[in-house]
Picture (cartoon, rainbow, N blue to C red):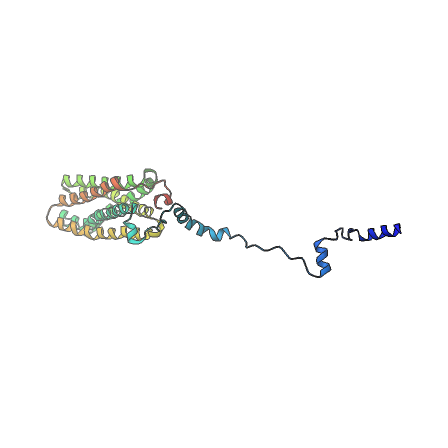
Length: 281
C-alpha cells in the first residue's frame, strides 16, 4: 500500500516536458487549448524627424511666446511694404539715390560729349565720336579696377570714393573752364574711371542688401531709379548747356556726383566679409 501511494504522488508532481518547459508554460497552454498567445499591443511609430523638422522650427517661436504669455511673432513683411520697413527703409532710399546719381552723371556726360566736341570745339563728327569713345574705354578700365578692389576695400569705401573722385575731377574741369577739346577729353576720361567704377559696384552691392523674399523687388527699385537718372541726366545737361556756359555743365554734374558720395559715405551699410543671412535676415 505504501509503495502504491508513493507512485501516485509522483504521478501527480509536475515535471518538465520534452522542450524543457514547465507545465504552466503559457505557450504550452496555448497549444493545448488551440488558441495562440496574444501579441503585445503595437504603439504608433515616432514621427519622422525630417517630416516634422520644418513644422517644429516654424512653431518653436510661437510655442515659446505662448509659454511666456506673449503674442506670437508675425511673419516678416514683404513687397513694397517690406522695402520700407525696419532696416530696409534706409537701404532702399540709399540704393535709389546711388543708382540715380551714378547714372545721371554717366549719361549726362556721355550722351552730350559728341555734340559738345562738335559745336563747342569744332571737331568733325568722326573725331567727336572718337574722343567720346576714348572716354567710354577709360570707364571700362575703372570697372576693372573697382572689381579687383571692392572685396578688399569694401563696398561703401569704393562707391563713395569713386563718386567723390568723380565730383573732384569734374569740379577741376569746371574751374579750368574747359578751354580745349583735349582738356575735356583728359578730364572727362578720368571722371569716367570713377563713375563707371561706382556704377559697376552697385550691381554687386544692391542684391546683398535685401533678403530672398524681396531681393528682386529691391534690385528693381534700384533699376528704376537708374532709368530715371538716364532720362533726366541728358535733359538737365542739355538745358544747362543751352545757357551757353560749358563750365556750369560740369559743375552741375560734379554736384550730383558729390551728393551720391555723401549718401554712400554717410548711410551706406557695409556688407563685405559678412554672410547674406546676417546682412539681410
